Length: 429
Image (cartoon, rainbow, N blue to C red; front, side, top):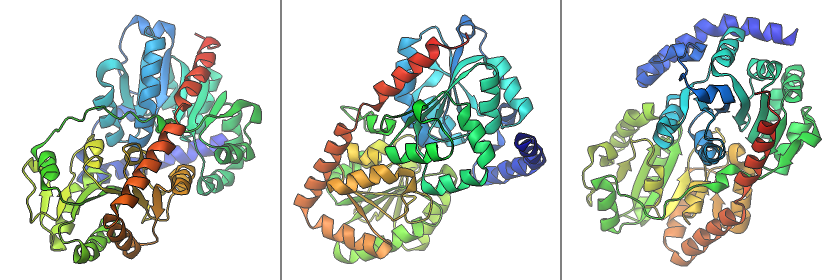
C-alpha cells in the first residue's frame, strides 16, 4: 500500500521534475539533454557480456563516482566478461564517469524510480548484481531488482542522523527497502547502528571503513595548464576553497579580505562545486573588487591576481597540490561538507566549517589526529588561515597527520570486493 501511494505521488510529480530539469538547464545546459535515459529509453550494447549478467553500479554524483572507480576497476579485472553499467543522476557525475572510465563501462543516467522505467531498465540491462554507492535508496529500484533475483549491495554506506530522521518519517518504506538488500558495507559503526535502527538485519552488515580512504593519488602530476605552472613559480602562499556551494563563495571572499590585511600576497584558488556557478562566482569576485584569473583562460597568474577561479571539471587534485591550506566547501553552509580526504591524502592541512554530516566520522578522525580544524564562520576561517600561514611547523605537522590517517584507514576496497564476489557467486545469472 505504501509503495502504491509512493508511485502515485511520483507519477504526479513527473511534470514538476521535468520543469526543474528545464530550469536547471538555464545555467547548466547539460540538464536539457538525454532525458530519454531518465525513463530508461536506452540502447544497450549488443554483446555477449549481457549473457553473463551485468554488474550495475549506481553512483549519484561526483563524490560517489570517485569512490566507486577503484571498486569498478577491481571488478573489471575479476569479471572481464561482464558488462559493467554505471548510472549517475547528475551531469557532473556523468562527466566524471566518462573522464575516469571512458568506454570501459556502459554509462547512462539513472532511470527515475517509476515502475515502468525501472522494469524497462532491468529488462534491457539484465543485471546480476546492483551495487548502490553510499545511501541512495529508491523503493522501486530495490523492489524490482529483488523481485528479479538481482542481488543488491549497499557499498560505502553512510547514514547521518539528519538523513536517519528523514528515513524514519517513511518507516514502512525504509524497512521494506532494507529487508530486500542482501548486504551492507558500512563506513563506520555509527552508520551501521543507524541503519540497523531503521530495520536492517545486523547479520547482513559489515563495517568496512570508507572506500574514499582508498583515494588514488598519482605519483607524478601532469600540469594541464599554463596557469598551474605560473602559480607554482610565484611562490605565493596559497589557500584553496574547494567544492564551494551556493552562498558560500561570498563568505570565502569575506575571509580573503581579512586575510589580505595580514598576508597581502595570499592567493585564493576558488573551485565551485557545480559548473553552472562558474560564471556567477567570477562575477561575485569581480564585484567584490578582486582581480580574477580563470583556469579556462589558460594564462599566467601575476602578482595582481587575488583569485584563481577553478572553472574546470576533473582537475581538483591539480588544484589541491598547489595549496598550503585546503578549505573544503559545503561546510560553511548547511550541506554537510564535501570530500576532505583528497587534500588529506596529499598531506595538506584541512579546514572546514561546522556542517560536516556527509563526512562526520572522517572529519572526526582527521580532527582527532590534528590534521583538520573546524571553524564556526568566515571570521574564524580568516583567523585560522592567518595563524597557520605564519606557522610552517604546524602546517607540516597537520599535513603529516592527515597522510597517516589516510594510510591507516585504507583497505575498505578489498573487503567490499570480497562481498561483491560472494554475491555474484550466488546470483541468478
